[in-house]
Image 1: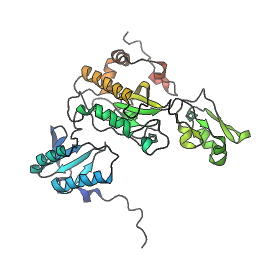
Image 2: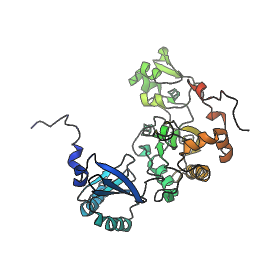
Image 3: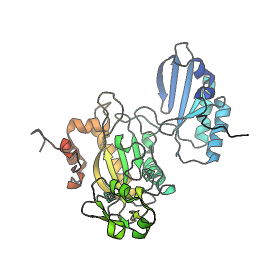
Image 4: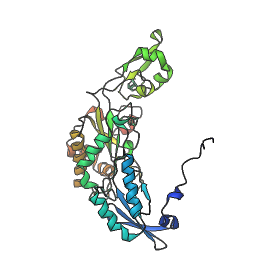
Length: 353
Ligand code: SF4
Ligand code: SF4
């Protein structure tokens, strides 16, 4: 029999718990009775609790089976994953809520990630599976979340704090629009393997892949030349051709960006901006990165108004004030020098000494 193709994903409505199906589009309000637990109330009077549990995103089938056993016991077999890769157990029968929470605690699951908390870090493949990373994803995320766990299972921040990690400037995920973005960066130019270029690289596409025009064709050698003075180590040429290897164990590391957001609440969505150009890849616990992130978060907690996202706080006090309060060194590395840089320069006389 021919395989069934192009059938798309299964209809999500086939996997909804009865209480959600019956009250679809009728939910009136929700509240957060405790960190990690949301209570949804419908116009019909029906209620449902969702219990949010952390997941490392990269999980084994055994982990998924364990989740299914819990969902069978307390949630009529239903659960869902959130857009930040947390797991939500969907509890239609309120009598099962406390037994579920007790079981989760006994089994070591972390309940949290709601309201003014640090929820899961959106992240990427890192050294586990990608060929272009400048840092790891799972390792850094584990180190950072271990350090900041107190903010996952509580709601004591000024506002929610979203973090994203991307292991290269492709920025798969959300680092460009997160309160805190952790991004893998290179600091050395690509090493050209001319033989490999001759054997299989489409040279015009390789030349066109460089955002600064640092690569030009070398027809005599049937290869390319890189102007190292123009290269800013983005690694895009290596994505285009395996002949442009760029990873460098000693010089690769992490840049920290802050102040991005996606929601339109209170202020417009914004991009995150670099505040730390380089931290070393100090595996397996990345102490410099975890400390830098904690310091920024604690400064925000100590100074922000209630409800103020990290970027909103920095915009209110001014970036120069952020740098003086944080003690982070401001260097020319942080001044935009790409095509549209002018928009980021100060064009007014208002600033604080
Ligand atoms: S961010 Fe870069 S290195 Fe990480 S998964 Fe995406 S393409 Fe690969
Ligand atoms: S690393 Fe980026 S800037 Fe440098 S040559 Fe390759 S594409 Fe161009």
